[in-house]
Length: 312
Image 1 (cartoon, helix red, strand yellow):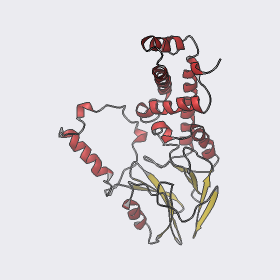
Image 2: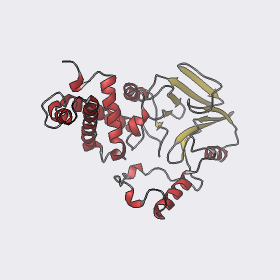
Image 3: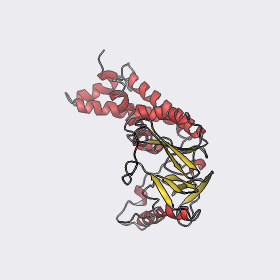
Image 4: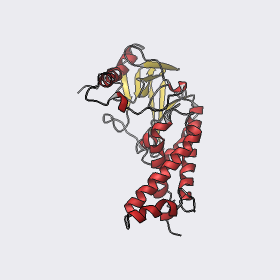
């Protein structure tokens, strides 16, 4: 089955809404906060993609949702990741810039099976281009590779930083929150000029990474504060105020109490974080609760911060 282009997909969705078909009706669609101008993205061409030259034969390509990069060398083209929605557009982009064939594809674990693998580090040299590949641990999930093109000073690390945007749901689907947070310092250890995060519009820079690190730090701090408040006499999050009514209405139902506890601390953390970040990053109102939720769970499981459920 062929993937629909983003333009066609959005057109179909718009038709369904405007025609009042069997899809979601326009009046049922939730209205989110307007996006800041900085998150507008790059102008796509008539074929649905945009290519940005980053220097030294290194390019970023985006379809507005996914982005990846490719390097043109004197002996072939190195493609770094091939997102599912980019598809043939990537071949068009390469073909419009060079007659060199694509000789190497650096893919993540969800793409076609690679012919060359490595444990911690691998340097790929093709003609006049060099690509340094490093595995520094899970970052946000197992197999997340740091990909650095030193000539152009371009670093690609997927699903950690989304320039101008709040991270995707649950911190980019992070399977290890501790490693996700640590990844920011690993990124900043590189001498890079451009950062490619794998999604949405433009290429980022060091400032974008520092901003995301600040955001995640605030989110973490606020979630810790939310859990700690449950061990006090706080009139909202204090255990007596929060859990007393639950047990009174649901005697012995610990799942009900725990569910209310998780929801209340997550909401408090999300709202507290939005007080600072609502107008600094795009879509904080979309995924702030999800991002707070994954941190709350990590604090409980990975950090042993248990609030009223811990031992005294």
